[in-house]
Length: 146
Length: 108
Image 1 (spheres, chains in turn cyan, green):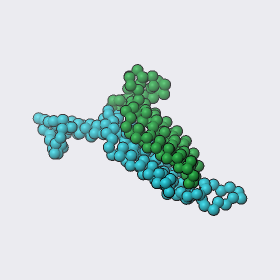
Image 2: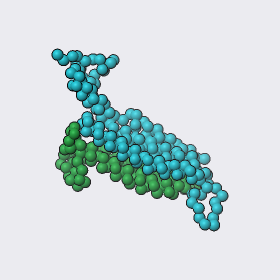
Image 3: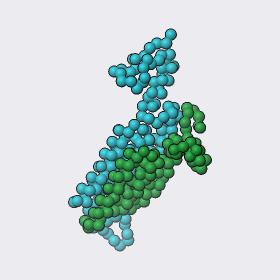
Image 4: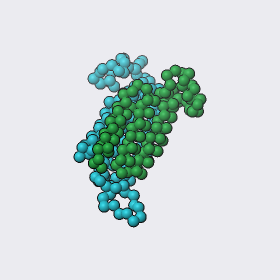
């Protein structure tokens, strides 16, 4: 019982830490690491859901039929999820490289600032104040260039 | 499953995994953060062995702790997040044969 509490707390804690990292990071690479952490917590939670207390590993050996066995279906799902997770990670890294190409930075608001600057230049308008200044509606605070 | 050795090993692994997760998000060095992620995957792999899932533990150890960390470390070089001085970055790029992406549409 104590063991179950420890393990479930560990899995849910990892999930919470990872999601907090995704939401609260200001650097895009930290967001990716938060995603990796949350994925580890989710995998542990799935394995725990299929665990039977006192069960044997789901490997059939000739002549031995275990009375209780842990559920092999969540294990197969987690096996797939681990590999898919690495694929998602590689895709995210490719997006980060493109983002760095585009905006030259990996800060969370860097791409937005670069996009706004590009749009302003193409439209022939310019901002009268810094893009980081606190405004109610930053997209309307522009001045036409004649 | 209820023996005290199992309990203590699981508690230790959970503490190590939490510490690795927190340090991956809080450490200043990006390389140290990637190493912490690898440590997290390693602890998870050991925990899978205790939870009677040896195949998942094998996959997590090879793919999660090995391949994933390799991809992240190579991405660190490509993103220019590793190496404090420009000279250090130059040596790293020459060693691995990859260059960091800095300016729009061109490689440094």
